[in-house]
Length: 291
Ligand SMILES: [Cu+2]
View 1 (tube, rainbow, N blue to C red):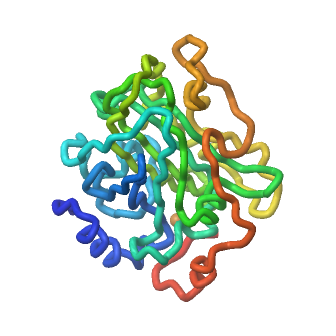
View 2 (cartoon, helix red, strand yellow):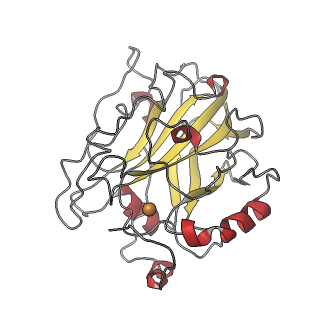
């Protein structure tokens, strides 16, 4: 199935159609950058055959962008200023009032960047944002994503060389991750043209797919639903040092493991759950393997 009409409305209809199987899951619906909003068919790559469904085979090419636009040729490039904050929106279905992702689907949230010319092939993916589990609040990145009504804000590296890049956002649900192949990964890709006066080229990154293994401690993980998850290790390479705005100290993979909690972003943390989530516990027709 192809989403040949790359417009939000058409995609919305498709997602609604598939909502009975996909509504526990999540999809990137829009981005906001430099005050402008863009949807799917603009600079977000079109969704794949099962729009909101997860990727569970970490060796699959679908892990890269979860798209039918494999070479990126159908996707436009949106302008964004280096050093600016960009906000993307994850939604469960595209009705605007249907929540973000099932509350059971807890796990980390990440953002990567790679040069667009690479089409994401090779050791090119550099991690610029991550949000795992935090002890203080006993919350996952996905909890914060739900609390912010699906909005994820991160910073475009300030000193990055201007040019075209792919941003790859990723949500990982760990509710079934205690068995191999059980983790559910929700990546999406955005094409951006970064403007500015930076001079720093991206360091070498990692291959996606390739770098993740189904035995990685961040992929194969027995989540404690109400317990301490401070032994959780977010998958992927260390966070890129340059992502916070300071130029990298040098070296091909400047970066080091980071402490728990959202990095490089201001994530709103409301004290109560949004009302839209409470309505989610109605009967579901299809098989559920949430817990
Ligand atoms: Cu699921």
